[in-house]
Image 1 (cartoon, one colour):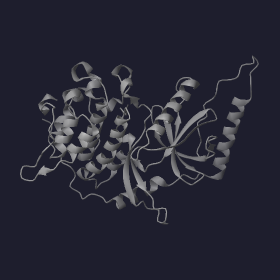
Image 2: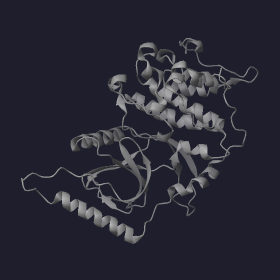
Image 3: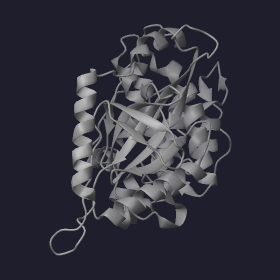
Image 4: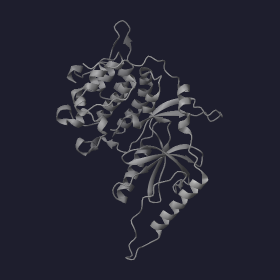
Length: 363
């Protein structure tokens, strides 16, 4: 049996201390004026080349993707709001995320969709993601501010969070067990909301979960006064009836057992989000990011590690990490109840609510 590493013994950081560490995450990049002017001239030239009209055959050129430059200002015709682009703060398979500020001095994030496929493909992907973000507005889901096309390039504007949860692992004084329940309370609420609405996120990992600091508008102090946690990137979220292992592409580092072997472990459904949350909370408890091979996932190694943790974490996480979908924690609300169940101080055993799930030896 693989031994679970002992969690860090250092005292936990307070939210105020953490806020100080991440103040720099909100510093907007102000490029030199000559750099801004140069970037704007390049954009004008590219736009003129695309919009110049027909070629000698009378055919209009295909729309040209124009990635934003630092210092460039883009404007939404739908809202009239303008956004000044800052540095790149993230990149995924389908888009690049930039810092930005708007007319109101709000600190935002702008996702620019990559030119994958035809112009119509990108246009459809942008519309679908924007539609999901509008429908799925929740306190613990990053909310959408705007979406528009500018210079034949598609922009989706959302609130900007301080940083991904993975940034916690760079802190010397991280004490994982202290963070699990506060993080779980926020993220599991978001997952529960998605599931009730009929959606499966299917890509929950540290890069898609963020810390969000709250500023006191009546104070000149730039430090954040409180924090919460949010789930982001609904780009590949699907309706319950749409999810299928054959038409789903998952992050290779978090492929669940049912994706790797559906015949043995069951069909891919909303409980993939439960498994992914289990992986995330396990790593958070242990204070480090972990990578599992496909074979280790199939062998149930994450569950075996979780079984060695004290209650209520061990029982709750190992249940969420069961390989067989039918034996796994069935909902985000059930997962939260398992994580917060009272522990008998004499036996250190968590009294989990009654369940029809088979014992953990079933994987």
